[in-house]
Length: 87
Image (cartoon, rainbow, N blue to C red; front, top):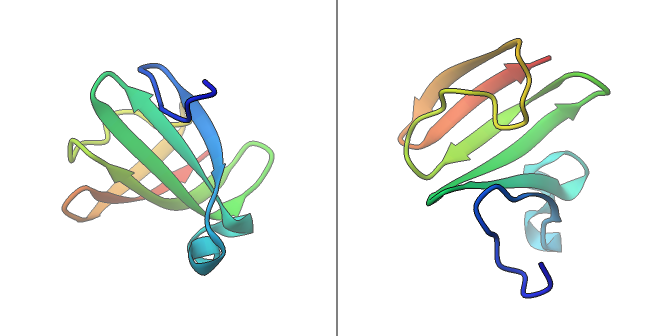
């Protein structure tokens, strides 16, 4: 969407500003909008069929892998934050 606004069902790769680029591999995050819920995936490793990283979930839950992987684990590390290993 040209407006830059996310709509429900939207998933986008976003480049972080230079001062935050160190927080995710390659300075990129994936932003997912489902209904009113917003999820942001910060990577520390990105492979062809595997990633590890930190995930922010606005609703405080992470019931499915935000990138659609079937094999994944998530550990709660704080309010709204999770550590994810997915393949």
